[in-house]
Image 1 (cartoon, helix red, strand yellow):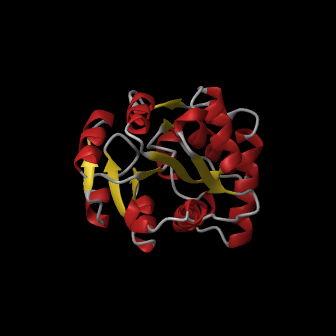
Image 2 (image 1 turned 135 degrees about the vertical axis):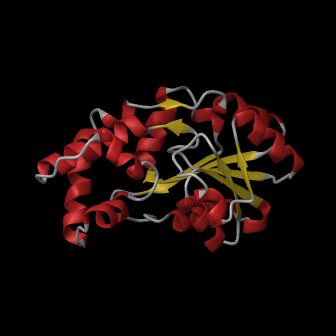
Length: 214
């Protein structure tokens, strides 16, 4: 059993797809691109600039413009269009009762992660919340994980990451950490397994049981 459990945020602790896809759609519309919400689920989880570039071929400047437009809607509205996955809050509290240190490691700005946790009365679920900054600092998942390790003054083998996308698995690997996937997030079929997740949990209770065996 690991003493430190790192959690991705979007698609792992919170179902944030509604706010993310609506804000991406808003940004694309401002740039003259029409897209259905169903086409934009790929934006739930990975860094926004990366996905705008990958999906629409934007250069760095246009991708940054798209993120700025995204935040025009996300700041006042989009951040609140989410809810915790059923059972996650209770599962995290069970981990904490076992003396496990719980940490958020997200590519989204820390400011928004803090706001969402406060809105849902979950600030006390985590010992530490690490995320990106609005200036692009810690924009990649591995950078957030590495930053959390430094803040806690621990090594990667003392912790495990819980995530729902290949970006989580790859980021954890880059830092020398194992990643457990969750089936209820936004991954494509077999995405987590193909990238090397050591286990994929079907639900929060399944995740808890596996962590207790680790």
